[in-house]
Amino acid sequence: MSAVTLDKPVAAGSQGQRRTPGDALVAGTSHTMLILWSVIVIVPFCWVVLSSFKTSKEILASPFSLPAEWSFENYTSAWTKAGIGTYFFNTVIVVGTALVLVMLLGAMCAYVLARFEFFGRSFIYYSMLGGLTFPVFLVIVPLFFVLQGFGLLNTLPGLILTYVAYALPFTVFFLYAFFKTLPDDVYEAAMMDGAGEWRTFFRIMLPMAAPGMAGVAIFNFLGLWNQFLLPVALNTQRENWVLTQGMASFSSQAGYNVDFGALFAGVVMTVLPVLVVYLIFQRRIAGTVSTGTFR
Amino acid sequence: MPDPSTTMAVAASGPPEENPWGAAPGRTRRKLTLDRALFMAVFLGLPVAVFVIFVVVPIAQALFYSLTDWTGFSPEMNVIGLDNYAKLLDDDTFLKALRNNVLLTLVVPFVTLVAALAIAVVVTTAGPSTGQVRGLNGSGFYRVVSFFPYAVPAVVIGLLWAQVYDPAAGLLNGMLTGLGFDGFENYAWLGEVRAAMPASMFVMIWANIGFYTVLFVAAIKGVPAEIYEAARIDGAGRFRTAISITLPSIRDNVQTAYIYLGILTLDAYVFMAALAPGGGPNNSTLTMSQHLMNTAFKKSQFGYATSMGVVLALVTLIFAALVFAVFHFAGGRDKKGDVRA
Image 1 (cartoon, rainbow over the protein chains, first blue to last red):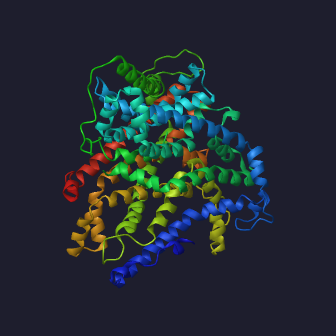
Image 2: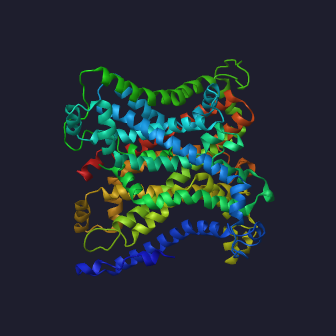
Image 3: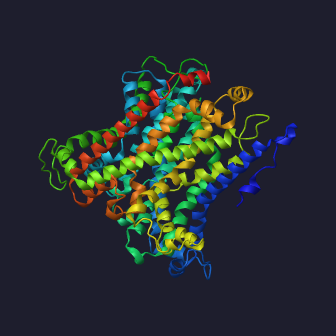
């Protein structure tokens, strides 16, 4: 386990203070528990990666054996035969478009709500807040028929719009707090220079909100990439499926007909993009969580 | 839509406060020029239109459909009043699912939060008892590792653990038999009535601990260090500090976390659908949400299914109210202010 190697050498000595036996005991117990927990978190993922290189026969024979030969056959078969490739591109299109749209619409809405006084302002704000708390299951059936009415059922644009609608309250709520903190003098100065509302927003205020936008965008990306319920109900045609649906279809296939090698390879391919996003942005994720909770 | 738990990061802070930069108030009421009116109409109109069409209207429709016997494929529907709700009370499968959801809601949030709190306390304040109050060395690593499952799609987590639990080729039985517990050879963790529910609960706990750890770590870091210094000077040990200082200081966060985990377990659809699509042995892991989806999209009883959605929403609201009440009575609201101020 790399946990130990990542530990910095004990720094307590630098202040000339000694560690008491109690400290050592607490530190020892805590490290043991935390390392154990880290193992429980990491090992299943390692096992999936290992299994993704084995043939289905090898997988069923023993959970620990190494593959006889390390081949990417499972990956190609998952990508083409199980359709993961198609689902991957669908997901990229849907999540990418929805993300851009929801960030734009969310920023626009939050900006007006946060910086203008008008009739019905708090009504809109609190309706959005309410939209955060209702379970999607309440609306899933009517939503199905709303989309059908627009002819958007089982289409990617329909799915994109639904994603936007359901990520909007979160986005508005978060960015609202952010736009409120932007100083007014900048806005005044832009106005004085004759920039007009539109230019002020796109050239001055939106770039100033970039850090907040980035944090919300990361959470929206993870949330939308992992979305399952909405596509399962509203996007049922196989060629339009997103990744999560493709993965779920593995588990609903019966027993030994499952191509286990492809399943494991599919898991790896689904997790890899989020792992990359997560590792690049993990500091910002922790930061976003903290700015939200404490001010 | 992001998982509800992400929203709590913001929700936990309560209503937005006034401008912390101390600059002039952010809101402005100015002369309404044509340019400004157009600007506001477009900026507000587009997002609100999307929100109304895809969120507000379906909620209103749901309340209406739940009072009908609609099957979805013909425009005909009869308003049958509360018959759907009466039928729910006789629907054994639904009641079983409701019980399962309640069971999940009793166990999963509690265990997750206790574990997350313990980890958060250890990595923030359980370091050496001399010098500055700080966490264990190397705590960043644990934080990064345990948060990771949160980034993985719940479907994939379910699928992954279904493989780990696999009776013959799974990792868990492989390890257990390897350690000499031969009784677990071919033990079907998700196929036995006794084991299916706890095994599923473990997966949900496993997936959620990390996020709440990160959240609590952030919250604890917001508590002024002087309070910890003072407690230490007064001779409080680590455990005492955790109970008397840390917990009261972040109780709002714990409360919000409890509510969001409750919402997650009252829904639980994605995890359960991936672990046991059929609802488990004897429906022992069937949830209301799974039953709703089957009733709507497999049996086409849309009116009846919508009434389940309404019940699900009601149960969620009741749960949230209960948590608020419990937290309110278990230690007055103002305590927190004392500690933080």
